[in-house]
Image (cartoon, rainbow, N blue to C red):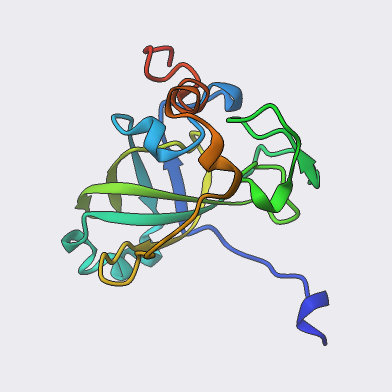
Length: 168
């Protein structure tokens, strides 16, 4: 079978817990939820895989955007008022609703990962965890495309979506 036409099935390795229960009130990126705590509850059969993770300060979380709507190829990003191509955004309504967040890892307590900077809805199925490795996860001369034209104040105001004001 041609891999392009192949369907995939994933089994969650755990579940996310956070104070975020309403999608349109959830910060849109971890940078806008820096003080927000949360935790990942990992299924016991995957506990062995958490060994040695406590030495990392940050982890990437990949998760299923279980409350996202159908895919839309042109969207108005949260930080902008102009329509953009879906793949030039991090909008949740994607053909494969997979989310990605870089969060601070505070502690590993058995099957619980204590986290900070959580911009993920409560009860979101967690698909994978990957460590952030400063030696590898950096890009010289990186560009932010259209997001470079959004001023910091506008990005902060629209990105936090009430979180910084304590509206959780």
